[in-house]
Image (cartoon, rainbow, N blue to C red; front, top):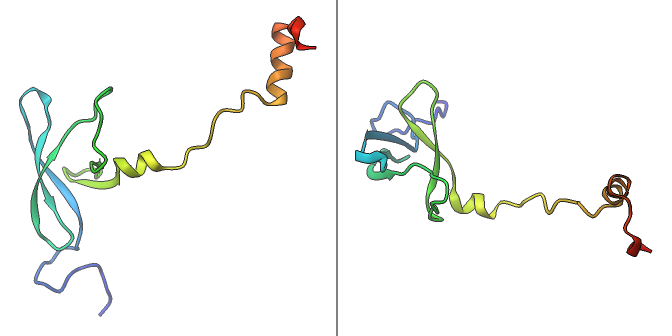
Length: 112
C-alpha cells in the first residue's frame, strides 16, 4: 500500500499541521484559532496581526493562508527569520563607488 501521507488511525485526511481561524476579536486585536496538529489533535491558538513597530516573540509562527481556503499553514518562525543569514553590508566603499562619487561630487582637496 503506497504511503499517501494518511495515518492509519481511522482519519480519512492527511496528517497535516494547520490553523483554522475563528472570528476576529473586537478592535482587530487578533483571532482565536484551532491548531490542528499532525497527529490529528486540536489545540487552542491565538493569531495576532503583524503591525509596524510591535515586536513579535521569537516563538511566534509566521502563517500563510492556503489559496481558496480559510486555513493557514505555518511557514516559518520569527526566530528563524531573525537568524537567517543576511547578504552583508552594502558595498558603498568599493572602488567603483568611490570613482563614481568623485566624478559626480569632485574629489575633495584633502584626498591627496
